[in-house]
Amino acid sequence: MNYIDLLRMSLSSLWRRKLRTVLTVLGVVVGTASIVVMISLGLGLNKTNMEQIEQYGGLTTISVYPNESGYVMYSSGGVMVESSSSSESNEPVRIDDAMIETIAQIEHVEIASPVLSLSAIAKQGVWEGDLYIRGMSQEALEKLNLEMAEGTLPTSDEELQLLFGNTVITNFYNAKTGQYPYWGELADVDFMNDPLFVIFDTEAYYNNKWGGTDENGTPVPAPKKYVVPSCGLIAGGPDEYGENSNYVLCNVDALKAQLTRAFKGKAIPGQPTNSAGKPYKEIYYNEAYIRVDDMDHVGEVQEQIRALGLQANSNVEWMNQVQEQSRSIQAALGGIGAVSLFVAAIGIANTMMMSIYERTKEIGVMKVLGCDLSAIRNMFLAEAGFIGLIGGVVGLILSYGISAIINFVLKESYYSNISYIPFYLSLVALIFAVLIGMLAGLFPALRAMRLSPLAAIRNE
Image (cartoon, rainbow, N blue to C red; front, side, top):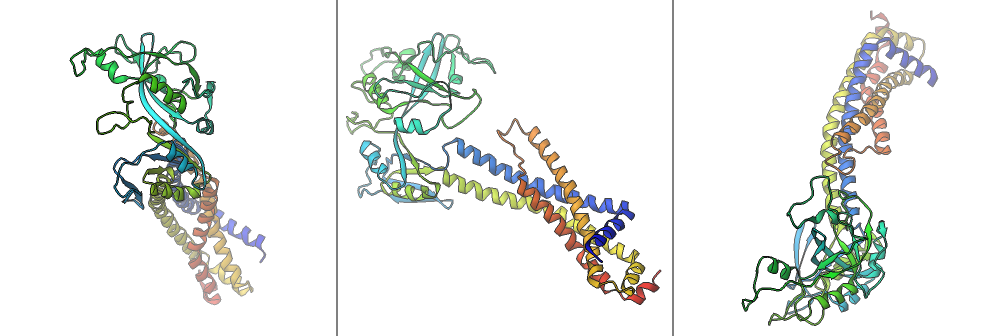
């Protein structure tokens, strides 16, 4: 018996018992759809988390922070680890230009940029809003690969120029009425064409606004307002969030010069002071932005930075935790779906056993005529495999439909599809359904192969 005859006889047998075949295939359809949809939810969750990680700095960046306590705390395998700094006196370890240069010399570091951050107040007409200004080196700004909606990156390290994130506009409200714009509306602020007044001394601004006084009881005067030019807008809508969407970016050297003028003789907000409460001559940075040449070297560079006594965090640690959680979720969801497929396998085995009992005489005739025992076994295995194949194909179609419905219903809650079915999952599910069918039909096929020819012929 050749393979064509084997397949023809298997399909003919299934077609003669259409209702039983359909019911058995239905079990495989439900099982396949269950396991594919369950696994797709885990894959979609992992994919969503990875996209969020990419939005918030990618996998080759390290955020470095000063260490005021002298001890470095970080997570290792989900456990918080404490290590002392290189300073035996456990004095604060801060980030200055010398520290930035030291970090830049570490192997595999592509970019080491200081980050100077502070809050300011911006005014334009009746509109007022908070700005979260973030100064970085020119090289770092260029390497951020920002998509611009209008304008360019800052072009000067002497004159302060502001690059606005796409969601900064949502921080503005009507200063006269105290009301934010209604839902879906935005403040009538034009960053690029109208002058923007920036107040850097926010403490003095609010003290003056609410009648505050200094230590001598004198009313606090209104702080100076500066007209700061805008150089560009980051692309994106007001509801699209990314790593820099709510920041106002600028050149760090230009920001330092501006702050030195604005806070002449006073401590710059966020800057450390000596025991007498006086600011240091040098400006210390709030953070350092580090980019490594390859994700595989991030952990190594982190350890060297921590050895300097600084705090160092990266998205690689977050990614490892997310992937571990995703694997657990996928295993749990896949196990739930596998139960349905196991029940379907029992149905296939039952169908094949019933088929053998009904075709006992047919099997006996085939043996008496000299049909090879392996051909009889393969015929029943082929029938079981066809049940798995048909159920797998229909189950995959159903899976894509259910996945589309889930994504449509939850599109408001997630920025990307929560159910994700890659091609390899479809292929593996189809092969798995066929294998399950053949394994379920193996015992009935062996039973058919071992039937006595004479007893089978006498059976009515």
